[in-house]
Image 1: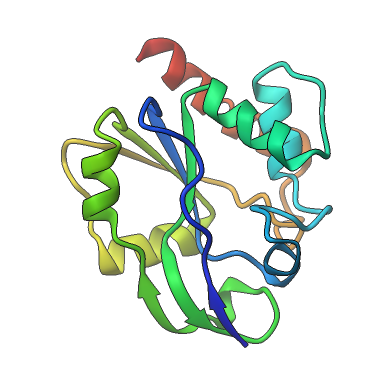
Image 2 (image 1 turned 120 degrees about the horizontal axis):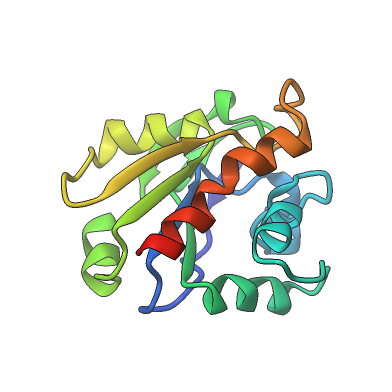
Length: 164
């Protein structure tokens, strides 16, 4: 299946960027970041920002914008069967040069899983004026880490936002 990523979510006031690899099959079908209901991304975000959970996608995006957080994927395009990042082939990265020029306040980049970081390193490389941090994947395929452990590791985002 050929897949194209979504445009970045967030605005020019964002101070942090969270990067996934590429939307999965369900996310592409519903046209929403982390649209698969068993992915814990949105549950983690609402808990981190002390907000009542919502299934409404516009409320989800507003939560990120209100908390100076941008969301995007490393890859613009790829081929893969299903949703597993390990099956990605023929990938093309997004244009981060333009993105960072238009989002100059972003100094901290968080990767939602090792594949996002791997593809970023391969195609973009680590810019020394930014801080990069790998976080455990929120995918249900990453079941070896409990929700509470993921939440604890993802709480680094709050610390960064409070200090920056």
